Length: 406
Ligand code: AMP
Image (cartoon, rainbow, N blue to C red; front, side, top):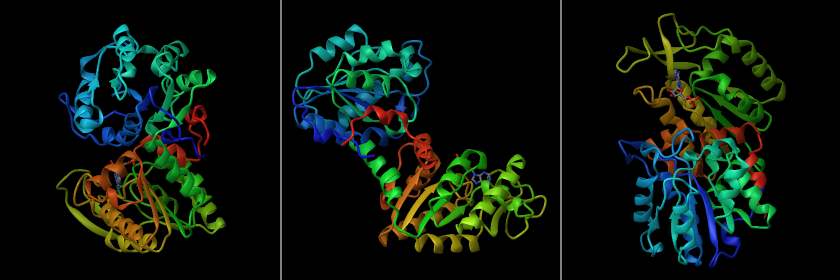
């Protein structure tokens, strides 16, 4: 799965369409977290420093393809990008239009100097983007000479700018390559997992077994050890006949959980579940709390892994060589039920420091490691929630078919 990367092709004087993921969180018109902008800077700089012209395009939020809506405009992103690029973009960042392919956008691109940057308006203002429309894709294709996918987080959806556009450009012989961000995601989520050093451990958590079932099944076939925490652990404990009190259990998945446990045992995959729990009376901040070992009594719900489980999970983590982590161990947004996820994060940091390859993915997990201030102490934190889960499920990301192999 090695794709040709932007730095491996000539860009001088060429118009390079870079599909980025600038879908940043916003509050009252202000960007609250600019990490997604920062994570594509290396790709953009690679185009500019070699005399290319960068045409950047992204979606933001979920407008429904009915034209311009101020609330979803990329204007604040254009301003922040100009600040971040500074002197690397000597002509600034042009933000010419209210529609990604209107006359103003085309005129601005036609007039671009070398090392110029144009940011198109939100792709999802166009009704063809979400529909993967060939007409919209061919209007975009007319704007540029080279295509770059640097939007890993959208690579599982065949939106027009992600799939039909590069397909149309390939059909006329234009290079279609990956950016540095996409390249790093593939290196870790695909490459390092395929060549995992052992012991190989997967840590899965979060709310529902039903959301993670395909990932559990796919990873179980590959790993030596599987840790399951978070609310989904309670469905497995119920399947083992352990009382779970008022904890979240997906009744309709208990049988499936039993089958998975049997499959893991047959395969010799070590399956680690919590044995003690940080419980609350209610799902709310400030609720009464208790540490419970084994059976959880009625009137209490498990909201995090308990102290003995934290130690057992940490020992498994510290003695593994490859670790993939998706999903929190408890309600990490609501202290004190963040302790389990913090302990797992600390152990993953230790494992990384001792040479293990560690990969965290999924929106909540990435948010947790950022909040704990340890994101840069892991080998890789995936920027793509849905897309990274699909890779862990063993699914093929359709938009990668449109990118040239290395
Ligand atoms: P997911 O999006 O599936 O990764 O689930 C993440 C969510 O699961 C977070 O918002 C956590 O608060 C929640 N969660 C984790 N553990 C528990 C638990 N024991 N009980 C209820 N919710 C939980």
